[in-house]
Image (cartoon, rainbow, N blue to C red):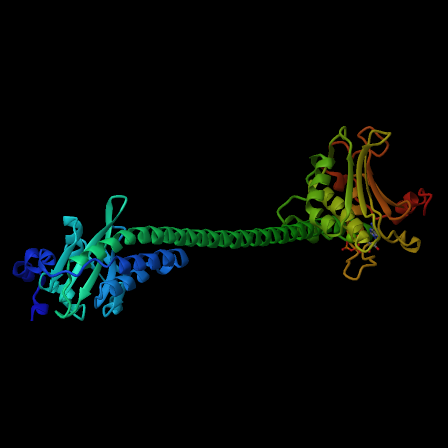
Length: 468
Ligand SMILES: Nc1ncnc2c1ncn2[C@@H]1O[C@H](COP(=O)(O)OP(=O)(O)OP(=O)(O)O)[C@@H](O)[C@H]1O
Ligand SMILES: [Mg+2]
């Protein structure tokens, strides 16, 4: 019935004194000290401590049970937060209660530590009702505190579950003796715990490191993906630009052809302007800058095909009066043809771009490759519209170049490279030079000097090449 008494009532019902019978230990008939039993127990414990420190607390409980001939025996340890005691090791009838415990502030272990002495309890559940669930009930419990560095850290105890066995002064002596050993065992276990937590910490750190590596790899992967995406975007932008320029300059070509066949195709010309950039206005233009822009656009292609670029740009190059979009288109077309000619060519693959001032103060650009070269049979045809030797070529690139260059009062020609490849060159004369207007301001070139598609001119240039 006492088991069902609520905590508050039981406090009133049973004082600490009423469940203590420590004084009885002295009054009870005591057996003589059995040092032999005590010694052999301590020796066994010492060697157990050396051999298997992990289980030393349990071995200690077993020994207390054996030496005191108790029904249950065990160790209670104060938790780190010092809020409760937990039963770290139990031998005998109470073994199933391992891991249970009692509150620090209201329980027999707490009483022992508070009074800093060993105590003999009888039917402690009368004061501590929660102990009534710990079956079998304790008729008598003998508890001794133990210390580490002067600080009490736990209790060691023996229980008699029936009144068949009454603890005496010799039991107390033995228990206190083993309590001193408990202190050593506790410290050993403490260092094991430290070791364990060290291992746990190390494992955690290793886990974190592994995670970090995984994260890092993931980041590298993402960055690579991002980079690839950027490259793809750049390639798109490049082909868009090329497309834009091509369509825009197709207007020029149409105009040139229109003049040739004497038919006005102005509708097509106007269409070219719909692409945003004005393809007719001629302004002061830095050709070197256009070359650098084109090199930026083809950077990926050069790398992809392991093509080395050699760039030699004259620092004194005067600006020319021209249309940037168109002239960039010329350079891009020539460079793309050069790259395409080297795609499958043997190494070394070299793209050489040079800008220079001509003898007559004009400017000249040459774009040379070490590619397949041009079959002499086709030499006179490469600037013709629709002439192509490529499966996916339109045969427009060079004819557009020619049209643009001529609309700028310039000339374009090709010679064979040495020992292989081709050299495309174009030139604009200076203002005062032989060719007229290219290096001077001229906003109405098309109107005053209609472009002409004139292959014979190219023929003339080619015939200058000793290699062809
Ligand atoms: N650098 C070069 N090396 C070798 N052959 C060239 C070179 N440049 C041009 N050619 C030849 O001239 C032809 C015409 O070139 P063009 O640029 O006009 O057209 P395409 O490159 O074939 O097609 P696209 O219209 O796409 O430019 C090419 O098909 C190729 O046979
Ligand atoms: Mg081409």
